Length: 338
Image (cartoon, rainbow, N blue to C red; front, side, top):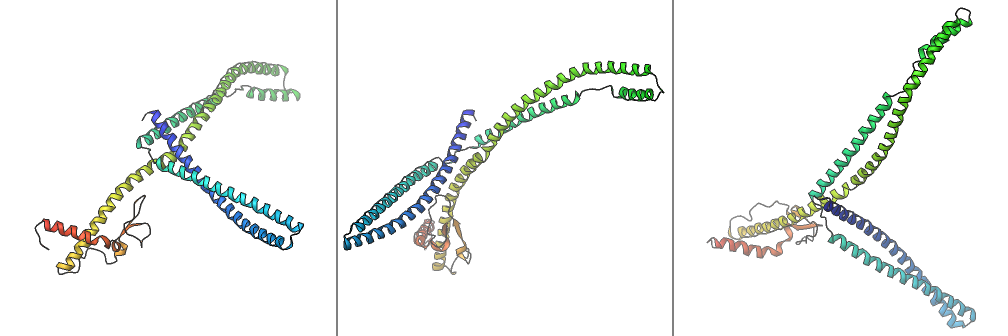
């Protein structure tokens, strides 16, 4: 799959996911608006009653005070009515958005094919390989630092110096031994300093390399995390497309089962009418247990007594006569008189 086609698929999947989130947010907003509308309607009724009361009082008294109170009640009722009207308009607007967005989601059905899933998984594997490669390089630099630890060859000499100085303080040693050891320490320190200058440079370069590699690793990790975050969306879209295909196959198969059951019931009727038995004996005794579930956009075939049921055995008798005539025709075409 080309990179362009893959990116297009990802963009479409992300758009559908965002549309679904937006749709749910709109539905939540509509729920709140409906609650607000009910509150305004209740308030409006109370203000209407208050206005009617003030109007009646003013008609009785015709006083300035009651006239002012009536005007205030009228203004409150008018303001409440405007708020209620605004809420109704907002609900109508949001309903329009919900319907439009829901239509877009339906129109943009799952379209992620297996090629996109394979490409996606290959992309993850490639990024993971890059991540693992950088991690290996960082580990190598850390080992370099470990192997380049600073050296100190004076430890034993300092112990000897300490012993000689102790003896000298106790009057048992001599200065020549002390001078000799001090000279050896000076030489060793010079040698260590030279070696450590090189080690320090190696360690510094290794640490700088690690810092740079860590930046690269973080960048790759961000890409890996971002790409992995798309996996549920793509898999959901892909599996949904398979589900829709399977549902379409099921609908065809269910209709064939429906037709077969009609024919079997018709044959039962013919057996009862022309044979020696009352029926074929093929159906279970409790026929209500025989039903097919309703899926997707399938339309119910006479299943009023079974929720989400495509059909049930005992509620398709309205087509029995037509099915019987079809079976009789098939039999007659074979030269048999009924």
